Amino acid sequence: MTKQEVLGTIDEKGPLFCELSDAIWEQPETAFQEDYAAGLLCQPLEEQGFAVTRGLAGIATAFCGRYGSGKPVIGILGEFDALSGLSQKADVTQKEALHPGAPGHGCGHNLLGAGALAAAVAIKEYLSHHPGEGTVIYFGCPGEEGGSGKAFMARDGVFDELDCALTWHPGINNGIMSCEMLANCQVLYRFDGISSHAGSAPHMGRSALDAVELMNIGVQFLREHMISQARIHYAITDTGGYSPNVVQGHAEVLYLIRAPKNDQVAQLKERVDRIAQGAALMTDTKMTSDFIKACSNTVINETLERVLLEQLEALPTPNHTPEEVALAAGYNATVPGEAQLDDDRRRRMTREQVAQFQKQKDDPIYTFKDVYLPREPQSGSTDVGDVSWVCPTAQIKTATWASRTPGHSWQVVAQGKSETAHKGMLYAGKVLAATALELFAHPEILDKAWEEHRANLEGQPYVCPIPQGVVPRQLNPGKK
Ligand SMILES: [Zn+2]
Ligand SMILES: [Zn+2]
Image 1: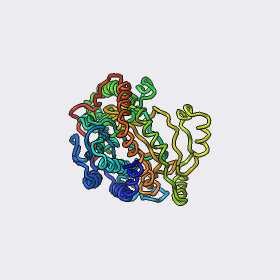
Image 2: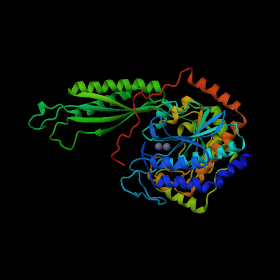
Image 3: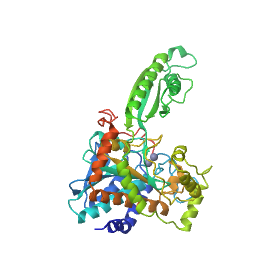
Image 4: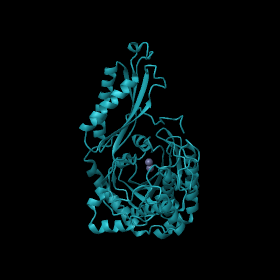
């Protein structure tokens, strides 16, 4: 079976993958609540002859579908969770909630899950004609947003048998996602004080809210004395109530700590822990901390990225109708400012490459391919990081949205069922499938990828940054 024929199956079955993506968009579910989406994605896997396992690493909405036999074993990672509070009507260029307060697919994971499935199904088609050439496993990975589902799965050894993992993310441009994303962890700090009448008996009270405030001030001073790539964010999740005339007896604050490497996050967390202890000491309250989740930094594998790049370069990006371009221009008009090249990218690009970007930067939909710049530092995080510690892992991005679309926005949700989104999704599926075929034909590339992987890890084994005993959970289950 030729590569062309294999990729043709993605066009043939295109409507099925688009329907799946749209259906997941219609019923957005947040971290670890994705029963509908997981069920929906398992169905075609079973129909296509994959051996499906539902429930992995103790997470009901994690699953995998396996097809083929022998090595190499290629993992395709899919996501399908939504973001809270981002409900938005489809195909309108103004902010308008579909169901006010409900979640929405603000990161395009409806496309991510279905596009990765398209790749897995095309790879299966190839393997059904070439038995014994290898195995493909589609991983349904829940709770990427704020849950680090893949880190829990990696802690349980779910990815251990893989020779490599491939995935993609919807976006505004087409290229390799060679992003060195940060490791992170989330910890909830709870303070317990003593309530009393704030007017008549303030001396009897010990304020938990004071402790939260003092902790935040302490961390504010810490920020000056940490490495510049580190980030510390927080949300006050309990202020103690609505009564200023009561000394607040309980309060809590959720911290998100990021740094380039796992051990740097762990060290920073210890300092934040001590600040929390200090705040408790100052206010005569009791502090307890609750480790919520963590994810690892992303280990880049250039060997694997170059195979993806070859396939991306060989496959033309989708064409768009004048109507699609006009609609994209409508979305772009809702974003202030203008398209700009990231400073780090600009520094690493040639003058000609910069000039070329300047020429195309105002296109409503980007159809060009991004210049490949390996190992771009990025201040975000992803749980793909944990998979990238376990085996060589690489990711692409494709243009599924108008070129000025901000991440995690109503504009992402509004474009989630558009033709542009569908086209970008199927294009991603094709690049991933073509890459897998290349690896089946030249398994020696994977030997090189592993050599690089071991060198990148500098002899460190993967140790999941989530301690044993911490279980995946949604922090705010009451709010959909
Ligand atoms: Zn996201
Ligand atoms: Zn995402």
